[in-house]
Image 1: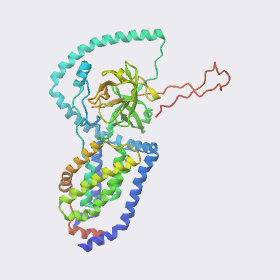
Image 2: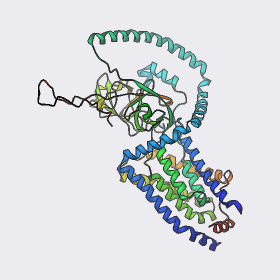
Image 3: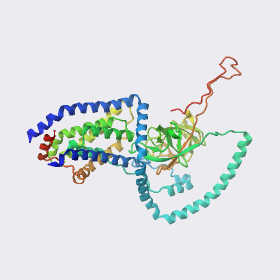
Length: 210
Length: 301
């Protein structure tokens, strides 16, 4: 099989890097500048009763309404999906660089989340051989467990070193959305990016290449 | 097949383990370094952001524009109604404008009579919002002005109406603004007309709570919250918002600035209040050195 020629290998690595940068780009777009309004309470008394003119002005200015959308963490979902399927497309160095860059640009404590995500990806790569042979169910369970573990370990370490932790409710919503979106991510990975589980024939070519 | 697996493992494993150990140590080291020497790593973060984000501007601007266009589409649908409302608002505003102009002239005359000297150095730099924080957990935006334009950490940032946040993290061409809604934002404020001092502590909601209020009984919903200038970080008198209560009875600020769409922000230059460092020369005549350090205190952190 020529799917694992060095050219294709490096091309797919470049594709993953590009994918990560595009996801980061959409994270950074300056369109979500207000807090998420999910747990917001209505303020008393309503503005209209204190200051009707101000209330009307706000109403006119208010165009798109409150922000309810929380994006799932696509980057980690894609990293997991690729790690399970083709470990050699996402080498640890690449993952490490991308996660660290994400940490730096998204205002997280640098290094910690990247470390946990990297460990999770490497573990999934190791277990990928068994996950690959089975159906999608066990893979989804493993991914969910790792996502939860990352969240929990992140919070534990942050509280150990006395750093303010991110809001738990938002984190849990993000986690749930990421878990729900994972099958879609896998589908996209499989169909559009052509990153598929290695068949026994491919192992020969890996061995041959190594 | 089983033999193939083990053979492919044998080649890669030791190298991979060493590599993993190095990477893990590296990442953990970065985290520890950040925890120990946060300012240095944050400066590094600002530099990285400075290097990367302005380069994306050419792509971000059209995409942001397209998204905003889609959002505006909703408001286009009620354009006529809005137009009528705006016209009636405008008529009312004109009467207010007349009143304001008269008051301003009167105020100027009174200030002149009293020989009051207002801060002449309060000028501003306007920047365009390049990027937001990228996650729902942090509330900050990145401006396209930086150290090159003389931006200094701690300066206040306002939109046309009210306080938006303060500068935290300056790169060569970019500066990060921590919004007042962010969990790490603490703004000393005064509540008018009672003059109560308080801290506006962001909590990642759109109406930050009012902390450390001396006497909540003197504060009524609808009172204006302005920055107090305590701590020398901000100029005093910037409008923050109005007092409101949540159903739990806690006082919060309904922010005046429009956080829904931050596009252009003004960074107010603040050169800090000069502090009086020498003793009174009349009382302590001759006992202190004549040359006193007349250095303005840099805007504090």
